[in-house]
Length: 198
Length: 382
Figure 1: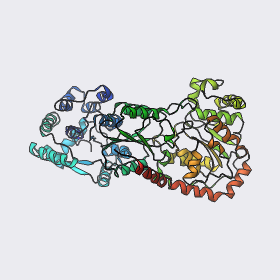
Figure 2 (figure 1 turned 30 degrees about the horizontal axis):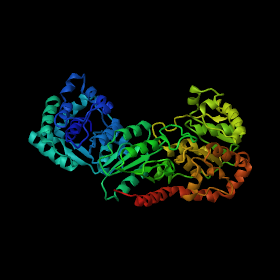
Figure 3 (figure 1 turned 135 degrees about the vertical axis):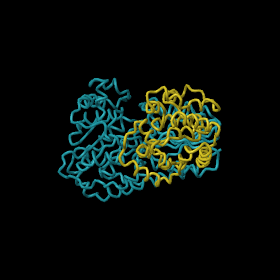
Figure 4 (figure 1 turned 135 degrees about the horizontal axis):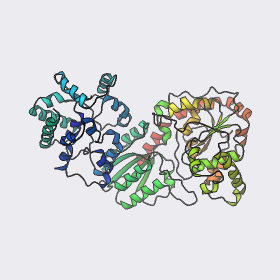
């Protein structure tokens, strides 16, 4: 749902070498000129949220990053670089439009972000900064999709409550997603993100 | 590892079949599922993927392999996509390539590499299949209709230009509703007297009269004489939703018609793909004249369709020469194109056969799944 840290979580779970790196649109467009990313260093540098400060708004910064709209390019690069996982974040209305591309692929995992009401003011602030556009029926869509795909939860509340709980939740989710955890990089990204966004 | 690079919007059957076939394997492989449209997707794929990773490489390619290029029957031995596959296979001689294809008869095209095996999985006629099973066939015909023939054409392709030029040159469109939605693209580049500058097909000696008919017919075709004027964009936001297009835009045309000349996307090469265009003739309950690759009618007969051989002369289906196939399809069935009363009477007497064809159409995916499964069992794996 909007304001539920989708951009952060996508990068968080795209740290492992087996995952397709999240990339800015401009770089993905020139994918065939790329040398493979230096797994130990460059990925985290790309993911830093500090660059967002140089943009007029978070929304404009977010729009420079590739997402499911560039699915063909991402999937092609996954095949070329032999990556085993690709992480997307979508709002319910976006998922519905993209659903036919996801349907009947037994390799896909689906998660939703769970956030306690105590962070509602934080969510409202995120929506304000992202210039959230109200979409009718989004809650109902979300519930239907959650049930239809038997989605598992990512406990964002725990992640926001403390660093310790963030680590535990990160490791738990990596296990569910069958991804290799990169705890040091995850902590570095978490600290960067919380400093910039919290 | 399985990579799904791109999918057409309505491919549930093909994708499920792909996954099910892979589940039967015990060998090491990489598998790729890719939609060949737009064609540069296929080019990028074949040029950049490392196929040395595993001993077996399975590539499921939905849609055509022509790379949007016209096939020259007199010169080419394989269409552009087939050549790509061949080139990649020859560059990886130790890799076993298994190609799942939407084309029939791909094995008849020249593939020099011995490490390529072909498994057809049904054309685009299987797309949206579960929805087609609920499509009401068009049996409520308007017997007062004065246009008992339809021929629906969208994109400009060489064989459609030749076919339409011949139909109009012979003036056999008088009782037909004929469309060519992409004709305005033609106007941007060519002149009405420029048939021979546009079409590079070779005419034999016995084609002298045909050539003259084509030249005259092309002039008429170029200026839209008697063509249906309709929107090129048939899908709107619902990409490839052929059910929606059939119900919203085509059903009434099928109610008014009894004979259909289908011009499939692929025509000249030995390998061809059957699409919803052919299926619509069956759901629309029209006598079908099918202009696709040579052998397409035989294939349809083979999967169980009644091709009304007692009413339609399908001898054209045996002709490899594309000019002969087109001219014979029209010449041999002239009465069906001109005699509406005869056609309507034939239709009434054979209504049940049309409904049986709808049953065959509803079960076509079972047929293709079974065939693919049998051929898959015969594939040699490393």
